[in-house]
Image 1 (cartoon, rainbow, N blue to C red):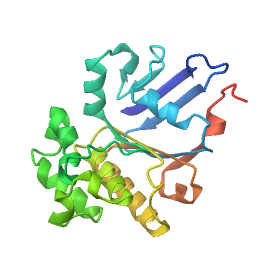
Image 2 (cartoon, one colour):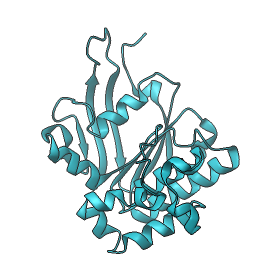
Image 3 (cartoon, helix red, strand yellow):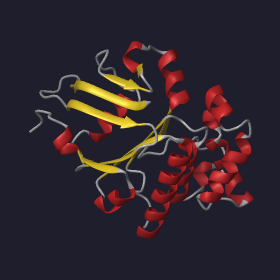
Image 4 (cartoon, rainbow, N blue to C red):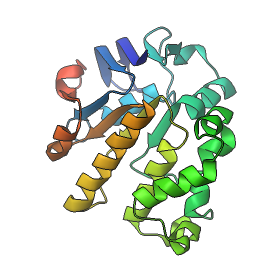
Length: 229
């Protein structure tokens, strides 16, 4: 099954003079990992917002797991997102007063599908992911998100995206707060977990030292035919 399919996507922010996105074609197959690189400000995050259904785009041009996101509205789109898409943001969007473990479990709280795909053992799965990410001690797992370092918060965001084996994971500059050694370990874990779960991974970054970890890499400036100057 195709995890992501884009055909003739154009998007312009309100009051902008030029399209931010003009993408003729992009697809990811189930379990495939793709590294998308390009400089800051070229529209990469806008593309991820379109794929996640955060911004409105024309119907029929973008499908996730064969579902046209633009045909869904309001709560239906939100439910589809939590069921099928794992998100790792540049700004991690953790709930600051919840513990590390509670933040990881959020998708299973709101999605029966993710809960079932965690094997009915959401807490055990969350603890395993935290262990893989070096956050396994009870003291760390029980700490509130706002008491953790930036690097620790970033790894919690990754575990939250991975739990429940979503069909597609979108990662927006997820290694920006990590040192070089931690970056490689993080990307190895992310690609390994996605492969084991059969999740497609679209990893966006300007750091091309990471691209050898992925099945293929794409230059966003070649992909996007935007009229931006």
